Length: 514
Ligand code: AMP
Ligand code: MG
Image 1 (cartoon, rainbow, N blue to C red):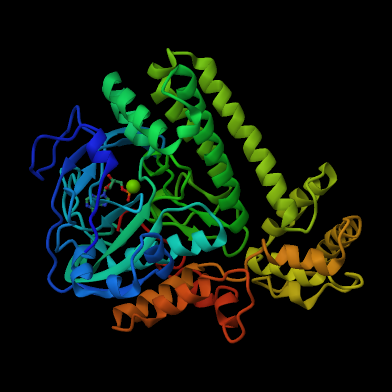
Image 2 (cartoon, rainbow, N blue to C red):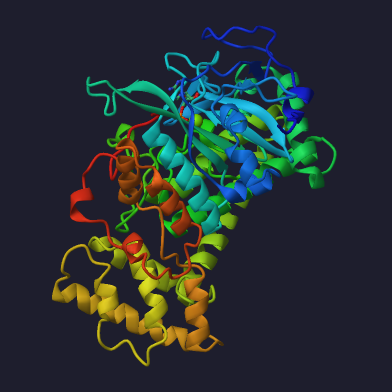
């Protein structure tokens, strides 16, 4: 068994109390807590790439002793397991202390933190049971890895363990609680620090604690910004702001909707973190959210994510003000950096998806395309991938059958005409690029994925796992490890969402925190 370390525990003050009863924890950034044992842990799946990052061999990960650690039944040698203390703005309102209510940190291996999600109650569990169900764990496990392979910064997932215990959930908050299989995902990241860790210190006027946390963050994760000072803290804010803006551009590019962009779910390292009621837009619909808890307001809808990213960075800026000598211009500066970065990054990525360089007239084409795509249900992934073929053709004069594949209903004549008009403009533009059509096609294929974690695909793997067959999880992981590569025989993973999945729970509608 490898030995774990923890810079976080070593450098920062912890809670002197060892007691899981829900409570407010002041003056401390973490609380020691032992995972609660589970009855029959089974390793359902693991990520070989993450194991390698941690310096673990296949045999080590599968070893029953290590699986027992991944289930929270064996203590990590070398460190005290802990829950981090943080707060957050939820759905636009300050929610006070939140903290790791069901995630327990195990410390670090090879400079990466390991965390068990669903390992039992902590002082931050409030009314929750500290557990996670299999369906949400399968979703977190698969999506963490899928996002990584798409090139989107994210926390990773080492393992998915079924606990052998049942967990009771009211899936739709409609008064029908039912037992479901429980599971634990071992998440891995350089750091799980969130905007909310900083916000909580400031909300309590605990500036010394805020300063220690910011110093720790600078020293360990942003050393090139220099020694702690007003200037380097301001730089830290700009850096986090820019990373967040880039992340938002990447989410938009692949059609990922996080679903709960509360500030406790915003990573200081610009990673996608906390996979809950997330979803992938099948049809390109800016107003879509998978989160049933947000169905009314749609705050976290697809098209609103970049704006919410900015709002969240502003909350972080306000939290850092005491370290910036209350200089609000420094926060403004970071917000400006966000806007510039997002604009540049989105323009670059959206034009690259069309095989074009990011010039003004090409950026306009991307906007025209967005309005075409959102007029009638059109599958975003299939549409863009089809363009990679169309670009090679001698002309786009006939509306290619390939593109019709992307429509969820037969398109009326007028729509086909509008599509053809756009295609012609775009196709002519591609001829102005200084690369041969074949080269453009290859470039486009490298940024337009064929395989994404469609909501219904995850749900099919979940349904099979509930019926005792977990092999669908590994198969899906295998497909998603190479999202840009044609995988003969696996076409079914790249198809349009079937009609049965249109409004099926889990495929289009999900609730928070399951
Ligand atoms: P989330 O929306 O999943 O990011 O969770 C928001 C807050 O609720 C965090 O503090 C979580 O740790 C906590 N939480 C969510 N689910 C549970 C649970 N089953 N038991 C305890 N705490 C939970
Ligand atoms: Mg969370």
